[in-house]
Image 1 (tube, helix red, strand yellow):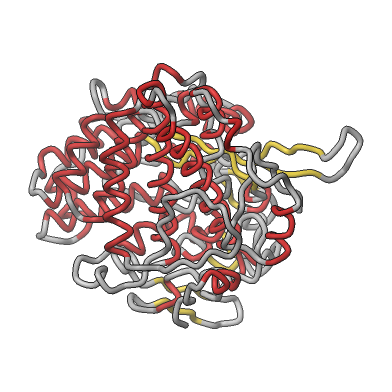
Image 2 (cartoon, one colour):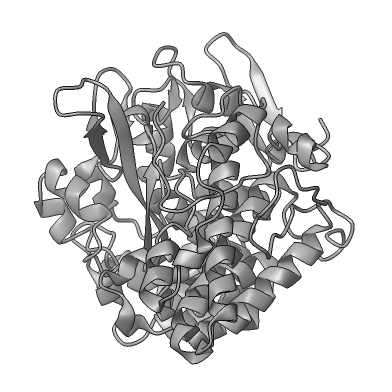
Length: 483
């Protein structure tokens, strides 16, 4: 598989010997060439993980079922069976690990230039972006390869290496420290980075940490940390004015365009809902509806048939089939780059919306529930529903306490609002992998079935909920996750 070339030299220490040889065949160090803010800004274009998590996230979740037939990709089969993924190419956890540390290396290289500059103020915005990018990559790493944050255990749970200096030697030794330590470092970078950002310097803002994207990331971070007041503080910086205008127009524009137009629009930089986009090497766009373990008719009905409003999801107007039981929503589009003009081989790229206004709204709803602001939570749920329910009519589709209690058969309004929220989130992000983040946060069990009659259960304390570190990480002194 071909890989994208970086514009600078990276000495990845967490790599296999063949990879290290590849890097060492390049000129040793070109950081001296980075001597202007514009050059640092160009480098920061590579400070985002250029790898896609959707395949292994979605395949581990409860959004998928056994179709009985379909493409057999290790990045889909192994997660479905709760096994360590036997693949190190695109769409695998190992590929994601490498991409995150490559992004961190770029951020640290940029930060070193910013710190050594004679006129540090000229590099202020670049420094802010580098800090946010470094924090984001570490945040994703710690939640993929370590236990989810828990105030009772994170001070002892193994984390991942938090790298803060450029790599300049091969096979440097690292330690994992703890999840709590990693979270402290992430928070430090977020807090320092946000005030430095300057959105005006971006030609295409959606591919960088703008102020809005940074606050969206901070809202996610504090949601994982269960600091709900902080979630509101940052979410409110994003959700200003008319909230519905910031959301995707699923029940208006999206239902009236063709599936090809939706493919082109969903991850477009001009779509207001997209706060941060990253181009990734990935085959997920061509695989997500053809793999054996995916969205079946049963799962489609479970996720998209009913909801608390009593109305129909607008998503259903854009659900397509490609052969038997191959259901898809046309959101994940591939850009294929041929290796040469006449070649039949090349590299597939997918633009991933890694931060969106919908997620910020969902995070604000959850925070308000735990802060007992049920009126505010219901208002946001209704704002969301007004853009997602077909032929929306507030008099018919309004979400209120009575409707929630009756629909979920509960007298606990807080529990009912959370059930509503997670049902909405599941429908919103189907086939994008985001469901997995909620499953790990709440330590929710996952059950998979096979057409052979097997029942596979991933319990709340099952160590397989944490993806395994690459075997090559042992060369850097890291202990693998228990199995």
